[in-house]
Image (cartoon, rainbow over all chains, first blue to last red; front, side, top):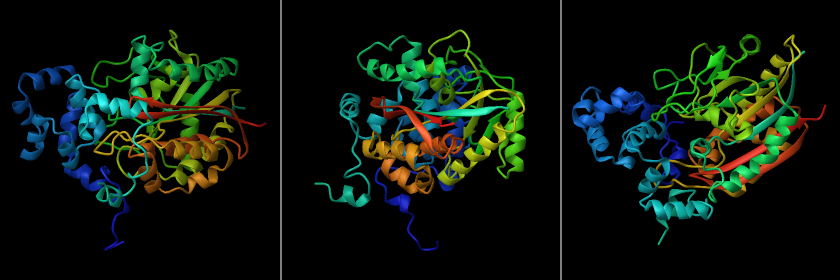
Length: 133
Length: 280
């Protein structure tokens, strides 16, 4: 396998939650997991920055949480099902966050879904995206 | 002896559970979806199983990153709905079948499928939404349920082939159980969807249709499909479909397709549903 390109890296706009990401994002994701408890949600909402200091995350990860920068959180090892605890704490839906991650508005994104979703054509390989006008 | 009579495939989108819980099933957005499940509900009411083995995945509810079992079988008396961050769903507690569950665990482990035995876990929308879709809102679920949680969150999930063969081992286990029970198996999750990143919203109707066709007619072909094809073609979360192969493996090689339904969208996801019956 050495030197072989990872075929998953060729899929555009997609991050595989693999071993490396899981290690990188462990504390970030475990912070999200803590928001499953109402008391912790309350403490986080009262003072987000202080609450985040309880978890040995990187400064970058803390900043991305405070900014709710979802694509950045994924790049820093966040997993969408764990991040769901964070946006649920904010009262936001999967569709709300998915729209942001695609650079769309929720209204346009919802419309795209009603029209059958994002087609696989033109979205299979990074080459497809590089060739977009 | 126990008999495994049929398999059901269905998506388990959390928004569907919310639509049921909030009384929105007759709204124009949701009405076609729930209508599509009516024939299945009728069929299930006529063919009422004693026990359902429900294959699903936990979504960072009972299992975090502290422990990631590839296959985890619920052997407890009961499983409470999980609090997924906004309070537990107001649905009945799921009653297990510890005797059959333990029998399956012992049987498949000796058959070289080393699953994890779980005596205490909550169950999230992955398990409760299929029950709501197919049984509505009863005071109690009409049958016992054995949860089988599969890791599809941390890459790599088990291969399609492993899932298919695991299903066959479950079949052997069920049919060596010394009680007259009518058993069904549900495979849940999918169909095509991607919840993360700039490619979120991917839906692939052609892939989903071919998957359903092959599930009935040529599951061996599906079992050979590599993970990359699921992720590229059906989205990063479309890989949940490997769980349907456990259901399929537990059925006869030749099955009757009783019903099929496909609908886009439920929130971010393509919803697929199929009922397969053993011929005998």
